[in-house]
Picture 1 (cartoon, rainbow, N blue to C red):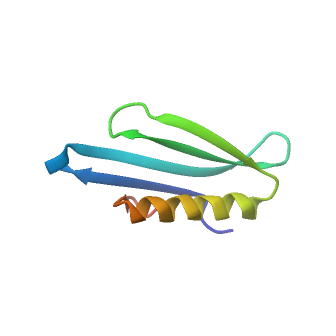
Picture 2 (picture 1 turned 135 degrees about the vertical axis):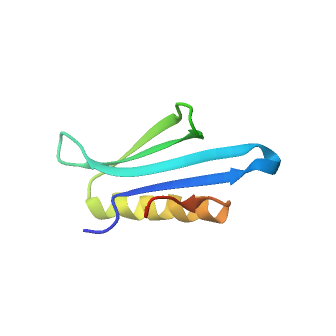
Picture 3 (picture 1 turned 180 degrees about the vertical axis):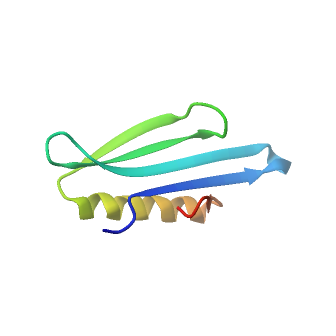
Length: 81
């Protein structure tokens, strides 16, 4: 079924950066799919955004795009995500 979640972190003590970015694809109550994105400072509540999709594959593709963008900005996978 492919990746349904990713958790990325960026830690740079020299710049006091301790950030996370969490991505999760979940089914909706109405037969669609959602990509839930949460980001912020590690240890603090983050901001949340939800994007909706008709097909699972579209949600997975969006997850892969966001994970790729964040890796380009220095985030790394944590916990096998």
